[in-house]
Image (cartoon, rainbow, N blue to C red; front, side):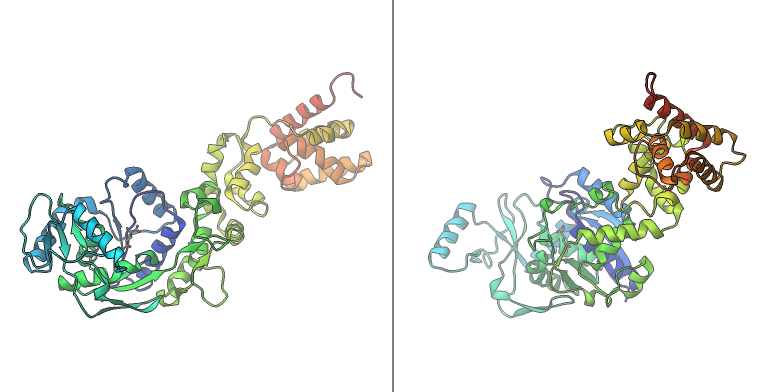
Length: 468
Ligand code: GLU
């Protein structure tokens, strides 16, 4: 049997990390078993679905590199098929037209509540054999007795009594299918073998299983994964920080880190924290997903991000860093190769945003020293030593970290300064800030001409006429 899983988001917002984790688990399970992973956009709620959300979901999937083998399928393009299955169900006596009006339903509901009964549809039209009419809805004839057993891969066995389940509406009076019905038709047609989804859908499962059985389709296996919680144990929401995948990207997180973080939110393999994609695919099993809810852990995500920034090939980081630089106004042609900058900064930056901020001085035409403390350091710097350093820079036969380092050492020694006392004002002059990679590496990457020019203009600014 070929394993077939699907991710079936409703496009009513961005791709949430909970959704991304569901997608990841479905993807991993399919990959692990050399199966197929299908993307289905559940866009039948015309009021809440937007093309922007569809785009955001596709963008999020692409960012996380969760490739799908089939789809995206759009439910709004499958209305003919839903109508077809609907008539089949009606023809076979598994569904019926119901003409009860809203007012009638509400009245009966109020009476049920008054009698302390669980409010539900009283099946009045179940055997009435109404034909289609302008305001009739279609209801599914749920079995009246017996149970539905859901042997959930995560939750274990969950038992639902049929007499607790309503005859749910599967088509509205305007003929449009309802959510539970479209899922059933799609899972059947797409031959889904494993439904992996959030446990907010667990209550829909017995209804869906009953409908699948009515259609003579074998229900898939189910795995309902617990929600993700905030650090405080409350349901995850925006107040806990970033919740959308693209927001994490904007904050400088690598897809590798996010994927690694998400796989561990609810699944583990001993105490292993770092997983390559290949390892995840080899090790992931839906049965090992934890039944208890997992809470977000932003510190761990940051730690993972730092790990991947340090260890991924420099070309991969450079490629990812580029847009963050461009966004911040970097002139990439004016500075060193991004790979070299990555090597210089990868031990110092926890996110791509931090790295881009720290790298900007390489790609700006000018830097300004705005921090008063740095201005003071520059003003108090040894003028003669800085001037001598400029001369040494001009005269260096080669422009390498070693040569630049030697120049610093020599000028410092000649002027009776420590290396640091000379290096720090130079750092401020060439980068505009007080932190950077080692000064020799910084100057070499920046280039001889620009290092000299920045040093000269800082000297001129700091030691204006009238000052010693
Ligand atoms: N469209 C549903 C949602 O976004 C998922 C349905 C399912 O996975 O069965 O919550």
